[in-house]
Length: 342
Image 1: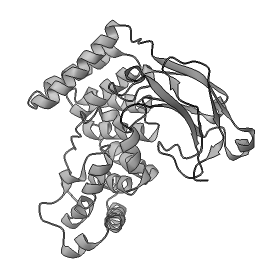
Image 2: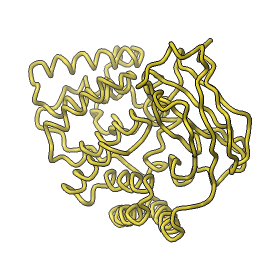
Image 3: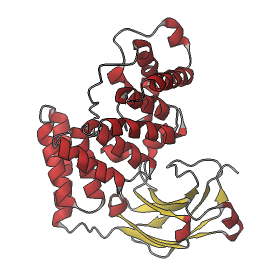
């Protein structure tokens, strides 16, 4: 499984623990062959384990007939690579086929190629600008590539999606998450209330959504402040300065010491040019309403510089961390002085 897919496990909780169930848009009349669809279907297991839901599960498009035995025997990576190449050949003949561009995006994402996958999905969305599903998928994809963060272009895409289809489940879920992340708790509650109404046929899902509505309303009533925070400064060791560029991505994160391992309880994304960085992490930097700083007592503050901007560490990244501190601590010193993989 690729690092790009694994990143969605560690940091990809933007869909609020499964609330955003992707609704794939109607496939155009000219669909790729059943063999190609089966090829994508071979990645279902890897995608499900990886938690990668940015552009919908390939299971939704797998043909009802099973894949040929020869295809089943091939490793998943080889099948996906062959599928991506076949889709590219189809697009050379039919460059205006939005459905095939969307399938190519899925295949590239499963192969861990974030950039090409984003470009393919952007082409699909451009060909169907009134497709709320593609806009929501595109927003989700960009959000995962940039942090993850729904700020900026993802939020604008979600606003367009909801202008086209005000009841689109994934757009409502992500728009609520974007509003919550920027402290617009009343707006988050409104988006999620509408989502609960849209999903009322699914009792369990509707209950989960309404629980998040109450969280947003409580935050709105309390002014969004919990008092839980950790602050300090991040610096870069002088001997490593030649290895970075000003626009390299800088992640500052807090991980809980007690409790099960998982996603950080707070993440801040900056750039190397911001160093030395005075930081404050609080609940505004939570990745989901349930995984946040105010829910834990002790944390480890870490920082990492990534040239690729990937959420998961890669060999060659630079990192550092401070000793364990209690939530509420200030003056935490984090020096980035270690090369990942060395």
